[in-house]
Length: 448
Image (cartoon, rainbow, N blue to C red; front, side, top):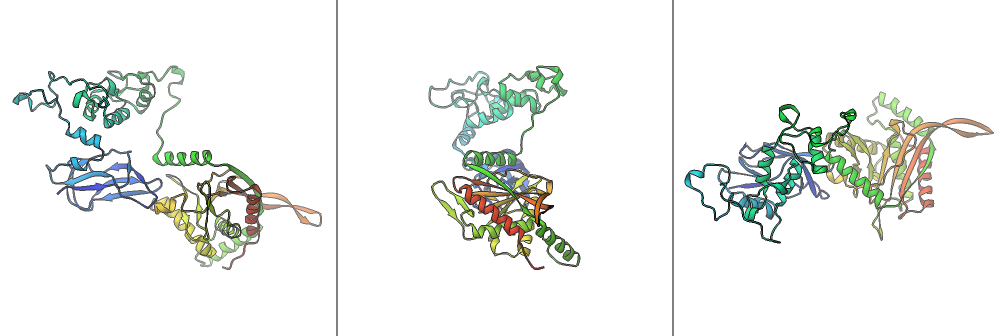
């Protein structure tokens, strides 16, 4: 009995996943526990294992496709079993069932073995208004392979261009470089019968890419990663759909720097928790949020969701891109517990094993982004909507300060940059809140 393999749902907030690598192809034998395909959510990576043994009867998607969760991805069973009933989408199923030639055409028994359609069986013209001359799957494949589907002779019902027509055209055409393919998609340039590259490969110059030979090799078109696409979309939506404003001030860092020295010495003597300056700032933020609950909230357009607990998001830089995991109920933790939890979620992000639900922008009630380790003195963080604010933490720099008695000296200050949604908070509220964070930093205390 055929068994369908679906795209798993990783967390309540995940609606679709990117198929990063199909490990098995049609016709492969599969054993229980074999890796079938690798996929990723917007931030985490996973692999799907086979739950049954058999043969891969069909695969419905390609590498790089974005697949809604719970959608059929492939079918495993015994050779000869039908997979039509499992194919996602009505158009796709119609193509599979479509005959290679019109029903009216007669094919001699000796011609059954040939793979090409009978030349005498010309497809009938498509009836006006009944269906598109190019099927959706054929259109998608044509765009991917830079094939002009409209110029093809279709072998589907009523002369419709279907997926196998595009595949045949792509196989017959010369191979193209990524640059040439991108230019064909952008300009609609015709694909040459033969290219000037190795083994006849079509290059950018063959499709009109290089207008000036002086600048022939100074650029390259490179696709961005799926994760970068998602980050770009989220950042653009945040700036487009909110009224963001940033206030900057600094806090006297002498207190937390002295505490950091004590922690280092304690760790050398066997203390189990390495409490960093970032951990101390995050603890100060939590204390300030408890005093300004209107900042510990989500803006919902005509209302706000105010949280009684602090769910703290922390921006983490990873090889795959920026991730913002959440430490739930952070206000219940001691400084030692907070440091451990922040380290744990950061490591999970770097390993790709973080729970996707903890990466949802709605999981956190407030976010901290620390660029101090990179020497950044001031920046404007972007709000992780629907949160109403985000704190940017800058590097520590010496600033002049009145030490009393007419004496001035340079004192280390840590920069704080609060971006807030002006639809949810007034400037006075935001200013008092970021000032409270500075006060908490300057007066932080904890036992080792």
